[in-house]
Image 1 (spheres, protein in one colour):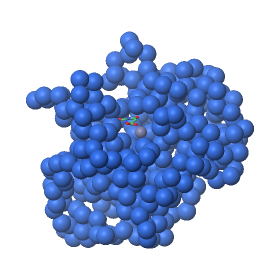
Image 2 (cartoon, protein in one colour):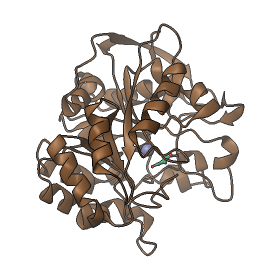
Image 3 (cartoon, protein in one colour):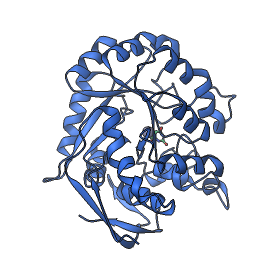
Image 4 (cartoon, protein in one colour):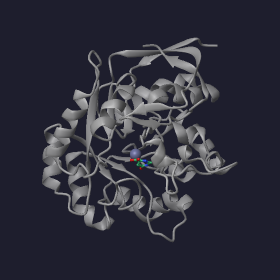
Length: 345
Ligand code: DOR
Ligand code: ZN
């Protein structure tokens, strides 16, 4: 049995840092594990233009602890009124690495998202010609569609068309949660890939609903049936270059989750790498861990692979029941559980 594992330094291809005190306190958790992260723009107000993205990037950089090499990769929040010229300019200047499509009201701080997908066609066309990556939160939002069906429905209603009409556009189908999403990504060409979170590899919807309602297992897209979790584990650990690491770590204060209307989001940043590694070990696929964590993402984004390495060692450790950020209690993913691997600092 392997006792240590050394891989190229990984990146997190989907992450929420927030802003202000919360950002200052959560950035170090990510920076100690990952060299780069695709930073989500769903602040209030959202990051919709290159000037605000550049300013946000500076605020993040000022929160990176001394001596740690970490680069935030910024995204542009697409709205019905996105200016393709500003987006293209921001990408050309190296401010935007990608643009993020939230269907309006799909999730936390998505009220300014896209209400009419067809209106964005000129933006998609420009992104295709400028080779800017499109990150998609793939869920329909119509109130009559069951929440467990919203991802599969998004594929049929929107994603197939976008991928067909903009056949060279690079698309990341983010935080996928269903076997339908796995199948769709596999059917598409190499310009379509997906990120997978640790929570969707570890838990199914029972974790949220059996024996009491568990708000810390609630995120969006919501965890699905066991058959979907198994399909995601198979995809992530298969060695396919189409699947890569994206934690979707999303800090919310404990009181905002333990509420009559609890927020969506799981804070998995503190032990993200160890959490993913547990899955690869359980699936007997340690040989594919580096690809998923450190190689497939850079290849898709056309960015260099990190030169530095990280080492994990077998050292069982208990995840704290609670952490503090911005003066608030936050319950991390795996709270109170023991993880078998530990990142060597
Ligand atoms: O669970 C989620 N939380 N899903 C998202 O898409 C957004 C995120 C957040 O910002 O809290
Ligand atoms: Zn997210």
